View 1 (tube, rainbow over the protein chains, first blue to last red):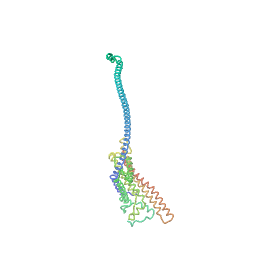
View 2 (spheres, rainbow over the protein chains, first blue to last red; view 1 turned 90 degrees about the vertical axis):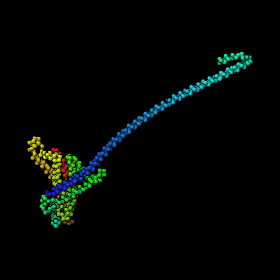
View 3 (cartoon, each protein chain N blue to C red; view 1 turned 135 degrees about the vertical axis):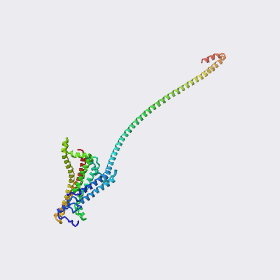
View 4 (spheres, chains in turn red, blue; view 1 turned 60 degrees about the vertical axis):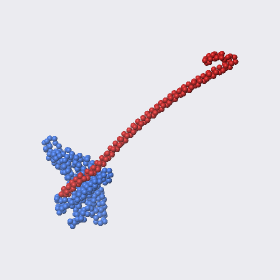
Length: 156
Length: 283
């Protein structure tokens, strides 16, 4: 237990060790640790942000889906409406066309009837004349009764 | 020198021989203050370089992404020191953490020299004509005081840096006893000054003596245990019992000593940080 000049020598060694540690060993090791701590905290922050982003994206996707569904049902409703409208229009057109056809047919029938009547009338008068002629040829002079026949013809 | 060297004749001589350092000038009286302990110097220097080399290599190759296991082990020590410094020392100085790291690792290494068989290095040295060798530098009061006084001196410098020379001197004479009036302050100046001197002195002394005392005592116990097997006189019951006792007691003490080695280094480091922290704190 004797104190001597070694005290100063050891203090010198100590000082040198501390200085070297201070200048060359501590800073790089601390920088490494700080850098790693920074990276870890950055990574955690990024993970948090990614999670948040994912939540937002999911919310947005759900919103979009909801909108699309609404739009689709709207489109379907419109299409149905349009379909019934088209069907109604077709029905109307068909009815009008049918009416038109019926009317045309009716007028043709009328015409035919009229025509037949006319023909019949001609034939009746001819028949009447022929009958009368046959009667009158037996007993009456045709020439004498000509104006009477004309009057009769006009009355038919 | 080797001609003068002879094996110790008895237990007392053995212990006394082991308690002497290798002095630079053996002709001088063992307690002459101008002497230098060469064993303390060289062993502490080599261990200091081991510390610098290992930590320097790790610092040079330190990888952020893929640290090796050894790098992680070193980082563990760094984190231990750094967290303690951040917790205790609130000054601006960037010197305290490296100082604490140096203290811790260097003291652990020097203390760990105790684990070498107590006679191994001295015997090898004796073959080369070195008469005395104490292998544990921290068991040398010079080593302990060199570190503790450096720490106390540094804490004073840190205090001056943090408070300015005037602030430091004012505090030196106005704390720990505070007074309200100017007269009382003047009266308390010598008391406070004396208290501060005692405080700084006791810090330096206690820091050194705690470490050196523990390591010195530990080494002494190793020597006493070594004496058990030294009484070997042949294959008789007494000698065999002594040899067995040396093995059992030596192992037990070495295992227990692991705790002391780490603990003393840790305490030295913590007190270093605490003293530096106290120096920059306002009272």
